[in-house]
Image (cartoon, rainbow, N blue to C red; front, side, top):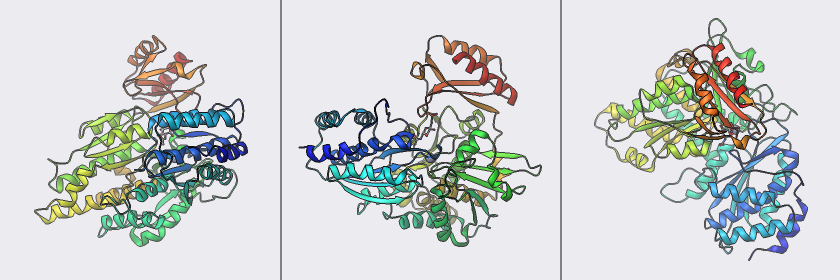
Length: 533
Ligand code: 16G
Ligand code: ZN
């Protein structure tokens, strides 16, 4: 039986604001922090029920709005293996969040318990964390009321990054099994990552220091801590570390700023000499974008696609050097936003799949490869080693010293890489590993292929839900006739490609276009936008 009394007492403390419709989207619930109190309370109840449904396994909850402006906040649930919440439960979350009164909420809960066949006698365990947003503490308190209402066991992981929370969830749930992911603590995380990195770069000449823009967010703490674990193996220069300055978070800095404006944060300028490489994290440290200035002080961006190309090629080489190329296949997963040049570069070397936007789609597709490399152009991504691959690496008998070295490198990579979700700190160490092995500066890395000029525009439309896509969002099926008109336009541009999709996080439609010449990419984007509007 649901503890109706307790639920209703707590629920009355967290009334749903009228007139707002909440939606659990690609990034969980996300909107202005000031209207999220009821949502957080209800997510507390939902997380407890999800845990009961999964026989008391620990569920994760992260309170963050990532790269969004500071007044925004949000919340998302993490399933036991550290991956995104199962799709059916996204719908349950939306239903619960929109129940207008306490009795409606309780009725929705009763329906959920019945239809999802939840055994309420099971224990409920939840681990949760938040980013540095000022609205965080009050929202976490509302969430904790949700746990209390169901008498669930909560573990507060404090202020930490999204990927660390994912790491904790998987580590807690695999503790004491033969698939133990890592020690379920921040120290466990830092020790695991830095340990893998140090083994990988030992004996390699050290690279010049790396400037790291922390977006004035929670990544600052993680960067500060990892510096202590890295010792001399890598020199980091953190900038934008003002986590308590009001309004500073993600403001003219961070990975999303760099990717969308295609320029470096002004605050990083004093640290950027010619040839100096730098990188930016986003507000919850799950995205990473690199860049550098060339001798003519020209800015060059190394985005998620460039990271995928660098990393995938490196892993392919190691697998081959270990003598495992006939047994372990490396594949890459991208979205329609991947630069056409990156897709061409990768397709010439490896199997490449395209899936719809959103980490869960990429992650699931990557799980189908023995080694699956996935990155979104926006800098979110990771590498997955399947359980069979992991076992093969652990049991393989190398026949030469060179094979043995390559095999050990692969094993260290499985330590260094956060396989639960994209992780800016882990990805940064991964990139630095490849650069050290190849003796690459940003320039050599950048020259793997030349990005096609591209343009992304937002269009505000009456109803974005009228836009339906197929073929991994690369083509529109509705509104009727629109795709044919886009095709007609695209044909007129050299190297032209364009697609239209409804955003999963904002009430807009996005238009992407690329072409051989920058002015043409811009022109194509605006013309397609004109068709959509
Ligand atoms: C969310 C997604 C990100 C995606 C973005 C697209 C997760 C954790 N994050 O931030 O992967 O690129 O949404 O936003 O899934 P859009 O639908 O508004 O273009
Ligand atoms: Zn993020």
